[in-house]
Length: 219
Image 1 (tube, one colour):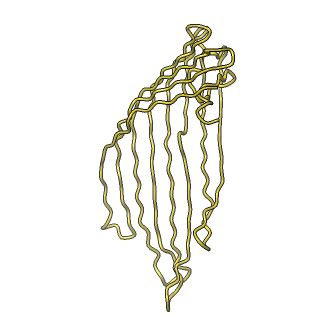
Image 2 (image 1 turned 60 degrees about the vertical axis):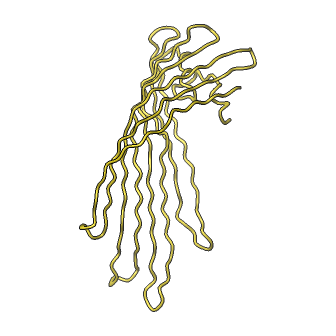
Image 3 (image 1 turned 90 degrees about the vertical axis):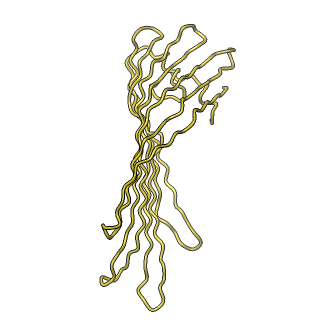
């Protein structure tokens, strides 16, 4: 559906592409949504392990009065896992196996208020608390016990908060428009490096900001 889903009224659940759609809820609503995709990665003749991406979301919609709904819950904006392993032949020595592991996730706790002031318009505003992490680990392993395995790992954790607004307009019996805007997010993060030899471990703190964004769709 692409961005056209942003213009679709979904009055059956509390998880929808456009939060303004929640204004149609007339009773306490609980929604659980999970998406799972499985992929394989290949590089030349080498096959990597499966990668799984899982996106669960749990939301509650609480009608305060007709056309005014409070929404809260937990949404996973993105979560991923990747495990890759490749043989690395070494002349006159045991075969080494390069192992790469990747974990990442961005989690959002939104507090949303959706309102339907007139029959053809719905609007919503939300405050988001976001937490995320990215972990990358690289190691070299051997099948022979007399070789030492080595590993390095980088873990980045970050957090931030932001505001967003959206609207859902029925401009014609056969046409609806969806609009959305999200303020920029200022993240604060920590980054740690760990190695097989602890004397090389380090930690750092950093900040970065994502710009504001907007989206629009028609259906």
